[in-house]
Image 1 (cartoon, rainbow, N blue to C red):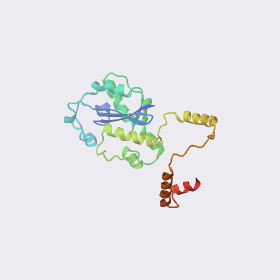
Image 2 (cartoon, rainbow, N blue to C red; image 1 turned 135 degrees about the vertical axis):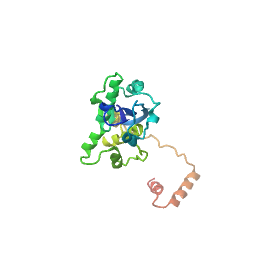
Image 3 (spheres, one colour; image 1 turned 90 degrees about the vertical axis):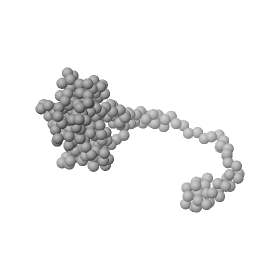
Image 4 (cartoon, helix red, strand yellow; image 1 turned 45 degrees about the vertical axis):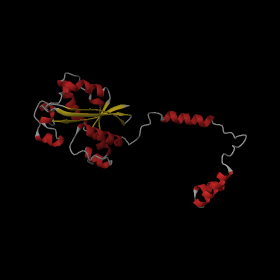
Length: 232
């Protein structure tokens, strides 16, 4: 199962008033585990950067001036996400911006059905508790010390860990558990225990056996080796 954990940074809160995406980051998961494949781009919004937005992510107009437009990276972005589910914290916000950018680039919008909102999952799982990304990191003891400012790729990597905890913290078994169980049953049914016709010959010399006995005595009566020697 392929999923993409995704985050964006923007110039503001509403693409309807001209706000744009300035950073997009995504992390690929396969059966809930990161594969190491990522997508990360800074984008030129072709507009000014409000002070409030810059205070959140630290991206300046000067830094973004020579970066590509969304329309220049859109095909790479769509190839990366393909038809995978998108794991997003506060999905309606990011999906609103992504679809606005896709529309400007004359591309088809993404269906809201492909997004899994970790904010909604957290609020249902922990009603009445803070559900921000930082709050969830504290709850699950996830290290977010590098997160001094919001950053799309870093937040995606952190969200991937949070998402795993939200869905139960389970390691994937790649669908092999049923197969392994059935195979084990067959092995037990077909297994036949037989005794050797003759015991195996000793491989230790007489001197080696004596040396081993002396060594075991030095370990004391409570040692595992001493108990084994008594059984033998």
